[in-house]
Image 1 (tube, rainbow, N blue to C red):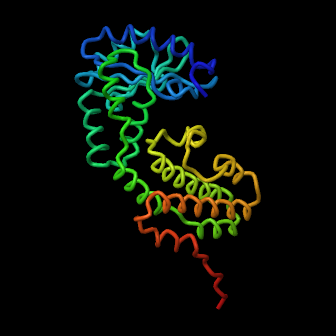
Image 2 (image 1 turned 180 degrees about the vertical axis):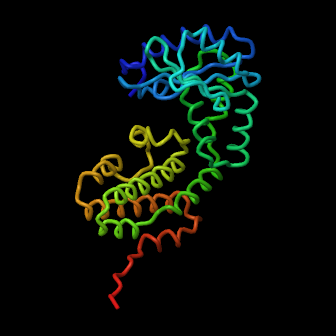
Image 3 (image 1 turned 90 degrees about the vertical axis):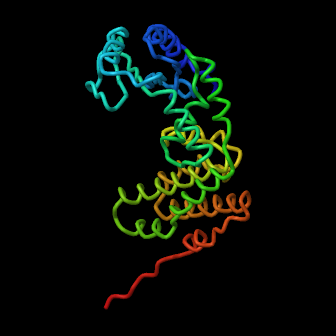
Length: 283
């Protein structure tokens, strides 16, 4: 889906541009972007508007409150100063302002590209910058986009190693035999999330949050066949079928890792995927 083909995006962008003109008038604002579903082109009828604002210094309470007043907004959940996030209603439409400094975000680039941080927040910032639409401070955002286009191989390897540790087919089989659908589908979801995180690294993609998992899977070139459909199907078929195909997907994802990182020792992961816990006799 492209932004121009999505009817839910354009009017949200018009609102964003109008609000940005008011926000940029405040001293200390260095850049403003559109993030979230609007920037990615995924917006639907229920989508809000995310506006990250980058300052030379974090705005004090009086500045943030004055900004909300200038936008004629009302707090949706009340004011939370330390959160540096203001969720507003403006003419009945939800707009989320995210406040941070240029220096703090520069530090995230170093953490990810030089220190290989795998923190979800850091990775999500990189994904946000890749996708964002600049409204103000285009020179800063252009430079950031060039840096966010990088994805070091060492970072990919670290992410893959970290998330392969969650691969566990045996646990799926066990919970399938215990009459607890909440635990079973939670286990299925965790295995799918672990595979998604490994596939992100294989495709040199940063973390977009799990909310956009299916849309991002559809764009990947390195992935198991029909992975999106098979993920969905796991919640629609009998337990045994869900366990069987999820186990196949785990093996297929591991095979992709072995193909692209043949030097990586995945023996322990393969052992876990092959393990089946025996039923123990009574007495």
